[in-house]
Length: 273
Length: 127
Image (cartoon, rainbow over all chains, first blue to last red):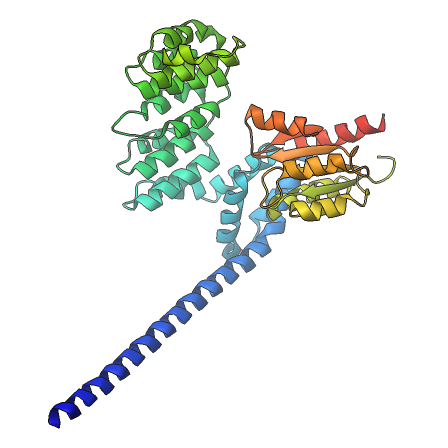
């Protein structure tokens, strides 16, 4: 009989404990969701306050630009974090004089120096975010730091740094960007290729070196970039790769590049032997 | 502009849509916005537009689908369409022109250049 009573007591207390735990979990979920919703709402309100001023700069004609930037600069200090976030978000969508004016404003307000500082932080997420900001600002004075970040211990940071270097659109960075394909840095070829193509112009010597690299990945990426940028001066080494390269990936990239030069369709037998 | 030209701006990104509308509105155009393909088609069918600026990548009906549908409709088949898109590959641009686009601007874009192209397309249409 005692055993049965004890069991009932244990059962009741277990149920009470389980109910309390459930209620606490539910309360925690509600609090977290409310906090998230409140934060999202606050960000939306902050964004809606700064949005007209930012769009005003982006839509301004040359003679209206200085005044539009001044209006944004004079936003109350408490609105600046939202403005900074919104401006950074728009930078990837636009180019031209208005964008340049927004970048100058961000630099004046310390966004770049903060990103340079954060890029030396201990958190890889913060370093990656800093590299992304430096890429959006696309200022030549960030070049050295971004090159250093291509050797960061975190692969994610290295990838963001290569994308950011691409946004500088500087052909002189070709060798540096190609070097990130090495096994120890392992940045994907698609990221490297896209970064190189942003320059829209070629460093012919660096691409020629790339075509002669011992790395399949560097040769293939260089060959693809040569084709996209139509560097016809390198048609001879590209033809040599198509004929003699041991890697089918490289031969295929070389064939596609020659096709872009107007040579005609590369045949499977040329690529696969 | 002899009379106020009316432009339909279609982009699922509200910021881009508002930016283009603001830029064109400041320059004297009447602007209507649509944020997806279905709304764009519905608006375009009224035949009230002198030009349509169309984003390519939209959820549901893509810009290219909208463009093909516009070209199939008698009321919109001759309306000039300028594609505004993040798709920068030559084959994407080719696909846009093949579907009937009159011009193509890739993102990131310059709002000033967009305005110039809009004026050129409209001038060409009036000649």
